[in-house]
Length: 349
Image (cartoon, rainbow, N blue to C red; front, side, top):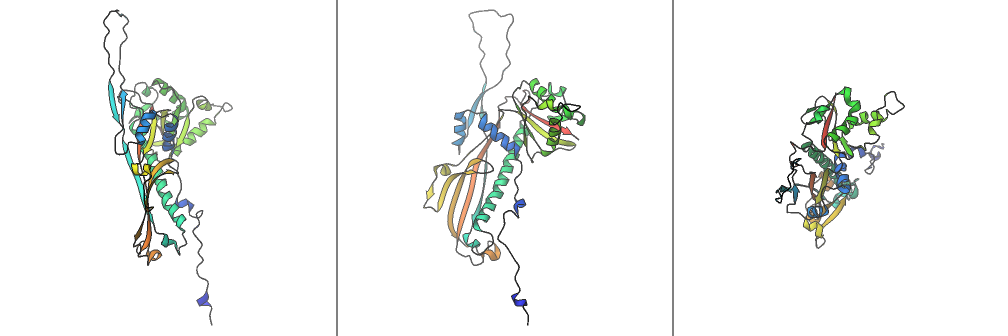
């Protein structure tokens, strides 16, 4: 006789979110968060332009601007009845949008005898896209800072050498960097608060300097006393060769990000409850996005192997999310000859 046939089978629990939490981890999206805060608190566009952005799906948004001009004030001025003409130079700037979106399907019957519940499966599918979308937007914001960083070296190169439009800060000089940084911005005639977008490797230097206060032999903390620096960490800001850490210093009120959705989602159309358009507030990216849901019947027999075997006429649900993103920085009529309030700095090894 034997009890082998009735031996307890492998013990398996229901899926536990805390056990596999590290498979889907949030990162640091400092560039995106900086753009979002600035757009909410100090937008570079007026209310009319922002309203046009929201309702511009399928159309262009064009913003009129006035270029900077060099003028001369005479110190031997002769008063006459003839007034000299001096017209301003205007231009039109077309804002650029990028379309982002994703979708996935759900087959409710798949979860009839499965350890992974419907809601858990749906949340994992949704969250992995949200994390990737947030990462993509953070990368896009860094790309904007890189493209629009200051290119004019006059006065700036008096403080540090410049390579590829980036300040080269030697190890021997990094302890005084934030003291010099304010002077550089002042040299360019920028005097507002400065935000720092940086990678993780830069913050140890900042924390060490901030804690070298008046009680230390060398006081470095004074660099942060009155200058209003605010730091934003991003894991998508890479270092170049021979670089210890990288940072973008940006004057407040310089950057912008916003989104627009398609007309059907704004209208909230509905076809018999089987096809539904709506706008949904999305976590992580913190924006209102367009959503489309539909129900159908489909052959899901081969979708997930044995988990869907026999599901030849199953209820099939489709979920889709999308939006158009616009990013911008303050207008500069000649970025190669006029200072721009975005400085890139590289702390060298």
